Image (cartoon, rainbow, N blue to C red):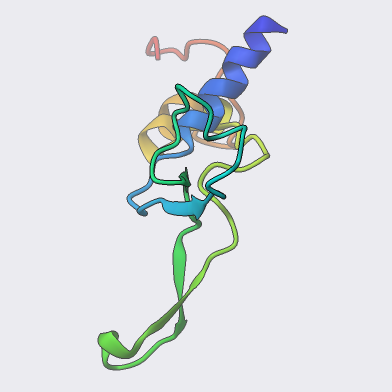
Length: 112
C-alpha cells in the first residue's frame, strides 16, 4: 500500500501544473483550527487552486469575452493515470505502442 500511496501522490501532484492564480478562501478570524499559534494560514485565508476558465461567449472583441470556471480542477479526486498513459505527447510516444496504443512491456527490435 505504501508504493500505491507514493504513486497516487505523484500522479496528483504531477497533474497540478497550472498558471491559474489561486483563490484565497476567507477564514473566520476566530477559527481555532486555522488560527492557532504556529498556523500556516496568513491573512485569514486558505489558498485554493481554481479551475481553468473557459470563454462563455466568444466576441470579435476579446476584451468583451466573458469567462466561467471550467468545472474540472487541475488537481481532482480522480487519478489521471499519467504514469501509464503519459503526461505529454513525448511520454505517450515513449510509453505506448505505435499501433493499438497498448503499453509497452518489452523492448522492440531496435532496443526501445
